[in-house]
Amino acid sequence: MKIVVLDGHALNPGDLSWEGLRAIGELQVFDRTPEDQIVARAQDAEIVLTNKTHLSAETLRQLKKIRYIGVLATGYDNVDVRVARELGITVTNVPTYGTASVGQFTFALLLELCHHVGLHSEATRAGEWSRSQDFSFWKTPLIELAGKTIGIVGMGRIGWRVAEIAVAFEMRVVASDEVKRPVPAWPGFQWYEVDELLAHSDVVSLHCPLLPQTQGIINARSLAKMKPSAFLINTSRGPLVVEQDLADALNSGRLAGAALDVLSSEPPTADNPLLRAKNCIVTPHIAWATKEARTRLLEAAVANLQAFVDGHPVNLVN
Image (cartoon, rainbow, N blue to C red):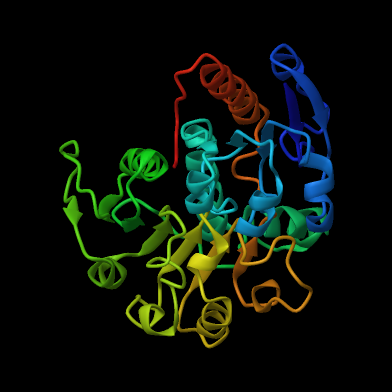
């Protein structure tokens, strides 16, 4: 059984082991695969693993031997799962590996917006503190989170973890989700529709999947409902945000700040408006990428494949 990993470098740049997959079949790992080389590289494979390489309907129809696609991530919008189902191809994902890391990174972004630690460290190293007449100085307003309201759009595993961290910071949590699970007795918690959540929140954090109904959920109309003092955080999927609309809101002072770990095109084009927007932090899609999370991801991908081989597939998405 031939196994092909189309884009293994992001998951394993050399600090993890592929031996778990080698124990299951003949393994070939490509660091990256351009779209025009997918069919050539995977045409003899029964098993294909992909992180972000796009497997379109046209591509899937050309891969005659493929029986299983393992998505090396939680989101699986890079695979045409409907066509995969039609072709009898099993598709799985890894839903839980990054919960702790993404929750932690969400607050790393938020705390940077509140304190601009990097900016103040650079100023100090440049001698500004040494030249100051005072024992303390700050270049931006400093913001305390206690008592603020965080609105979480998407209360899956990661959204739930972010809520737990927010409660530890003494924030009030409100949330929007189609599935309204029972929640602990968090002080002041409420379920809202998205528009209500935007209007009531000091921080809005996106943790919903990219679906037709969520694409562009943050746009000029929805941004206008947010407080001018509010922050927007996105560690989910870039296309949830209409980037020019967000840049316009930031540059005009209509929104106080934003921090995004994901963009609509990755890597971004040089003219992406958010790369030059005021008080906008952009990081290169790294919330998921701690070694601990990547280790769990690879182990889970191996377990998913072994379960498929054994005849009882798990973590199915189609």
